[in-house]
Image (spheres, rainbow, N blue to C red):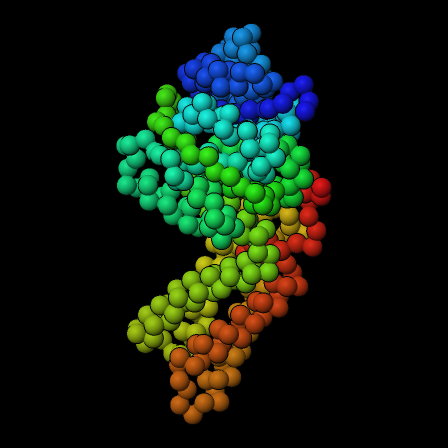
Amino acid sequence: MDATEISLIIPTLNEAANLTPLAERIDAAMRGRRYEVLIIDDNSRDNTSAVCQQLSRRFPLRLIVRLQPKDGLSGAVLHGMAQARGAIVVVMDADLQHPPEKLSEIVFPLERGEADFVIGSRYVKGGSIESGWSPYRALNSWVATVLARPFAGKVRDPMSGFLALKRADYQNAKRLTPLGYKIGLELLCKTRAKRVLEVPIHFGKRAAGESKLNLKEQFRYLEHLSRLYDFSYPRLSPMLKFGVVTLISWSVAAAYFVAMRTIGWGVLASVIASYGWVLAVTAVFHARYVRTQREFLLHPRPWLDFLLAGAGEWIACGLVATYLAKRAVVPHEADIFLLSFAAAMLIRYILRKELLLDVRGLRHEVRKDEMK
């Protein structure tokens, strides 16, 4: 190993009150090992800098401040990993919910070559959570874990932020595009770890400060899941998303179609007007796609491409609806609705393949920083 055997990466934001007891407990747990502590701070407004300056005189601790934070906690962790010197990297929170006393058990399987990825787990035998979790938070954790199951495999606690892996495995990971808090899930998926070991931990209460988990982070988690599904299932994922967007948009359009027929609109006018709602709902998903995938886009004007494709779909819908309405002696309105929309969807599928319009962001090439 290097002079530094183990690098502990601790992302922080206004966690000054927790840093001194954390550093003391880490040092006690890591006694006999050569280690470093990297505090990756997202420009805190408390006295984190002063506390770290004092702690650096007693412990092998470095403060790295991100003046323009990007990608939340996950981005901070990857920033730290890029500067780590240890052969083994450990990630843990600063709020003392992850017990430093478990560090030896976390790194030992990696030192012995018995695992590729080690997780401090709340949900294996011997693991536990401090009482006081609200039913909402418990349900939120359970749902998040279930949604990650398709690519987390048999791992019981893929949401854990207390983890360790070899730095070489991190460096070999492909297409790291983290978002939000679940860096462990990102690394577990992208390193394609085969031997995953879960070490039971007691997940304690936050010692000081405020939790960073909020509704915004929960939506970011869903976006992060979307990226991981794309990575793990590159063929199936876009088809499923195409189907989800189609189902939602058609449901809204069908409700509008029924409402228009109820107030006396004709079948043809109702079908054509209803397809406008398909485009409106799809535009919401497209906005999310443009916002989260802009750096991947091959075309500089994604909204112009969307409008051109939408116009093509709407015209196809109108032409087919007109043809069916005029050809049928007694036109069945459900048939006209479904067949017209199906024709428009066919045009959408063709155009999205040609123009790379996709709710997940299709592209021919990867970014330069993904080419490892």
